[in-house]
Image (cartoon, rainbow, N blue to C red; front, side):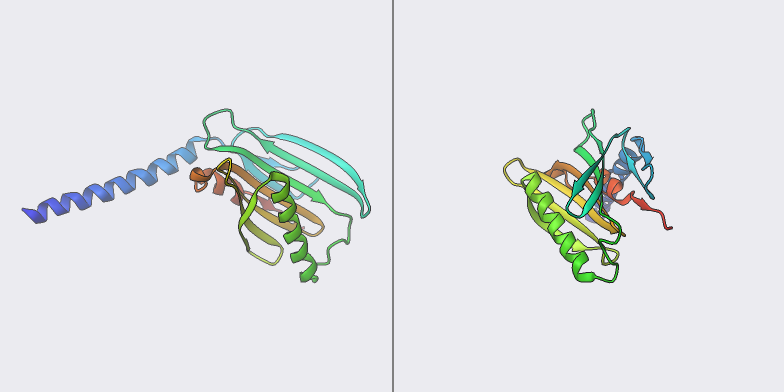
Length: 187
């Protein structure tokens, strides 16, 4: 008799896990993700709705810098408050692909500036894929919010993708879907 009860318990636990993972997958599939091709750029990314696009050109001591901002704020009860993609175009030749030290220093400084701007603390960062990309996590312990993101340096363009959510929802599938959806076309 005891063996039978344990079997039912095991089956119940397995069944609950299967339902949980199916529900996570259905939630992700139920949401319509829109792939946005960034005009004049070899990049595209998916947002869970139609994003707002803003572009401007600023003059700096380095020369003209193009800045593109693509953002989406869900109207529903999405656990992610805000999705953002930011592109900063540096003048041609700013970054030499063989200058690892300059690339790492630029990624370090860019992440610190982002953290200061958002009034957050860097809680995690790690190089990914190659020497010119990084994954990161920022947190604001007062508001209990977190920012998860990725940074890429593609030639002379710095790309930030990040999503804002609460600390307890920071493992939500939509965040990874968004961050992993960036595509960089090869020329």
